[in-house]
Image 1 (spheres, rainbow, N blue to C red):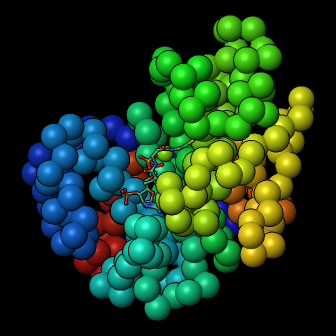
Image 2 (spheres, rainbow, N blue to C red):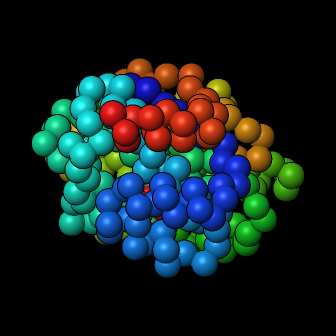
Length: 233
Ligand code: COA
Ligand code: MG
């Protein structure tokens, strides 16, 4: 398992267009439709990041990197069933986790929302208790811990929100150790919170018991330069 992060910075329009034209048409069309330039950059950088990781891991050309999606929209690499990845983006970061087994990652920028209403509606009693048992100043952070952990589990399984959010519960002790979750096929999923930036929460869900703490931070311009060179090879 490896986990990567890129802090996004602006890309000029010409370069953005050029880079978008080098990825697959479906994603290119999706990027064009975004109104917010940051959405465009996050999605593009996610795609380029995973392509460079694949190039390193599998030593294949960019044309051989063909993505497909399961019926719930989880992307996977066609023709390489033993390579699993998952991407998430929020605020100024794009993160990607890879593994030999299905994996899920979620990053969320911590911003104020009506977390009490959301927790009441979508979280289990235990999860809500975990959030409100702390003083007010810590509750929003705890809300985002539960949020990202739940989403990383859903993303690992790959069935999106067809999995009811109250059908499983995140149980954490005071050391932030998280109980593993067993699905209906008796697969056991392990979860962990990772540290990257104080204003963000990141959670990873994996079938591997050992989830690394370490995030490999990649500079965006280095990534783009590597990609441009790789794409010409
Ligand atoms: N399973 C796993 N990964 C998926 C996926 C699925 N079914 N569908 C898409 N993805 C991947 C894609 O690579 C996507 O990146 P891309 O659009 O650049 O290709 C990436 O996940 C997006 O993840 P993230 O940045 O975390 O997006 P999100 O938080 O907006 O949405 C979804 C994540 C699409 C997987 C889905 O769970 C969703 O719609 N969530 C809504 C948020 C929510 O209610 N969460 C509940 C948490 S308590
Ligand atoms: Mg998310």
